[in-house]
Length: 423
Image 1: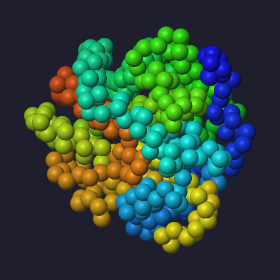
Image 2: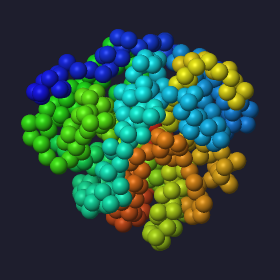
Image 3: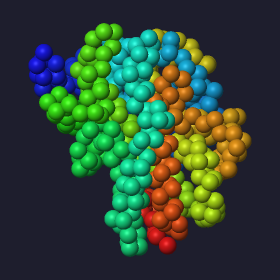
């Protein structure tokens, strides 16, 4: 089989989905009542969602919206967990809540396996990726990650004000994932564009969104062709050669998994790094304590993940049903807000406080159920190393202008602009 026979240049998962999927109008603008009209794309949600979630948890724990064709937002830990573990009534075939619903026919594989996959296929697709993300495999990345963090700080040494999001946090996972996939390290700026288009561009007109996604698939297909012509030991070559049920992976599976690793493996981690630095910049006591006691960092890091969990996932309702007192319709969205679950006082003592020496911390930052993040060991390593190097090199810093901090909108929340004053 030739390269073009297995990976045709005209392949576009997004184009295929647009032709056979369904779309509903996206309604944006001010929210009238978060209990009946929520929208995770509004600026007040991006700036500070926690008071909104706390209010909903008290008066309407499962909020509803007619936006995006209809959806639900559970805010209690027990409800979020119940959905996450229930693969019989909720499907993962689309995990980004938008005006587009891919057809039921793409299940159980979905567009970005295994995160978009349902059982029983999910188990086998996930198993393929596990060897690349074990603690042993991740440990091999640590030295290079640490050296890269130092090089980033070398690059802005002497600056009085540094944008810790744009000049530090976002570059770390981009370099790590590029190395794992065997992509050119200088392509990092393109990765940031792909992340924004995929996760924050859901309000774009359909034609523009399709065009942007087309650029992502063009890039990935070019990388696939290069790896087919020049095989090497990396994750892309592994996926190309991997077999499932005695056959090579379908092109859509290979490229879909690459999309998952490129998008989810980057934005989530840079958001966690940025949020942790934001907290330390505005909490001098915690900063001083970590600088004085570096051994506390692993515990503090878990608390940052709990308190500022970056990830919210989506599910779709499979069939009309009554669930926990609300009437859900087939293809209604469910937003699994792991950040809201992590702030539930029924699950965590002093849930709204950031306690960097919290002893018991079974947070849901990496998800719950069968889709718990396959890359959690990698993300933890990157977060730990990024903070260790920063605190070693820059033990004193503060927010240069709190009003200038900008947070991303959508289902991954983290600082996009984080100007810090050094010293």
